[in-house]
Amino acid sequence: MEIDVKTALERFRMFIIYNTCLSLIPKGYLKDHTVFPERDADKGEIYVEAASKIELARIRDIRFVKAADVLGIIYRSKTGNTQLKWRQIRGNIGRLTGVASPNSIVNLLEAKVLTKEYIEEFLKQRAEALRPESQDASKTPATS
Image (cartoon, rainbow, N blue to C red; front, side, top):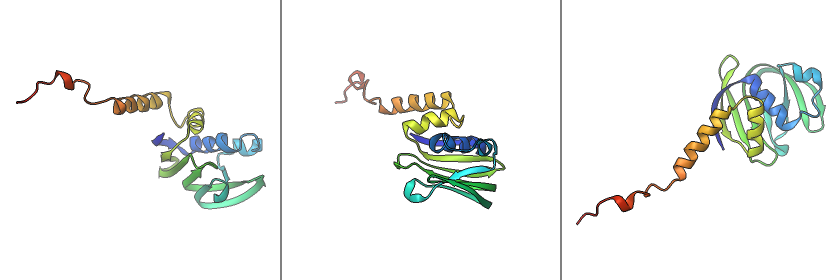
């Protein structure tokens, strides 16, 4: 599913945590809005672009970093089925764009990045796009 929404940095941070490391993130890091997971590109990239970053810990293939003034985040799932970019617009609000898998859609909803209404509107537009345009062609008068 194509994603193009404005969202708060904290909501996208929670999505990344839900999608990658909820079971292993220390509780203190979970509560600290300045701590983000990062991961190397060969394991499904998570990269935080920030004015400053300090590595706090490594747990399995995740690095936890403390970041200040986040400008952007690149997220790519291990499978490559989800590829998202968050870019700062102003303050902690940014634009999230890319493609998300069904599993990621569930976590985007859980993190309140996407709303139920957004999904319903997307599905409605998709159904309309797939509907044949020539359904009423038999009612059109023939020209001679």
